[in-house]
Image (tube, rainbow, N blue to C red; front, top):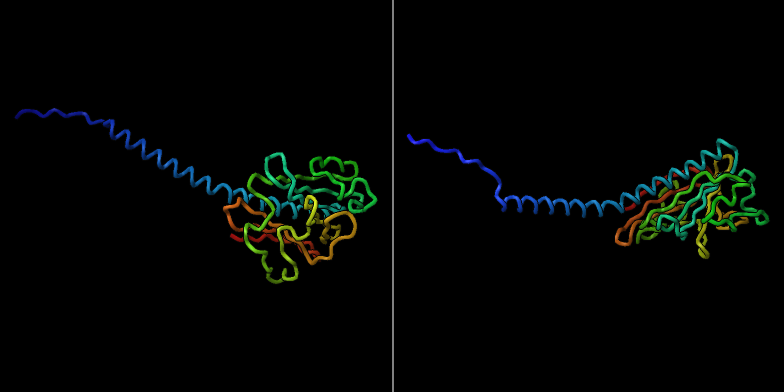
Length: 223
């Protein structure tokens, strides 16, 4: 019987082109998925850092016996290209909110936190990344459930309505929280909230709640 020659099988040019095209499509779909996931990841990461910063402030006040301040600057254009800066400051002299102290909270320059170094210590600075800002993500301010129902929630419930929108939370040596929009008397609040939102096409927020009586910190998510 005549022998049959085995012919080596390879890939044709058409098969190679089709395979490369499929790989390219899958890579493009993966890239699109990652781009959609990144803003939500940035928002969740920033909210986690903000929550940790508030908890660290309270723990520092209990451990050192010094007032510890969390300053929020919602409109500050930070060096990362984002909008918003949060500064954690230990007020060893207990007078950062005195109208006669210099510098004080009203005169504090968020672009140069070291200006208060002689009177205390800047412990940490958190700059919000691009597309993460202080806000509620297009959702109305919520009515908080008990035991937070006496707290009026907002994007930043203790921040000033004018100027650069600054606000501050002070944890005293007993861990209680006090809220300020400027130097002088504290605000009469049951507690305060700060919410972070993603880009305009992303609804929902990540909110940090701080109670005044105990200084407890809780994070909630919406969207």
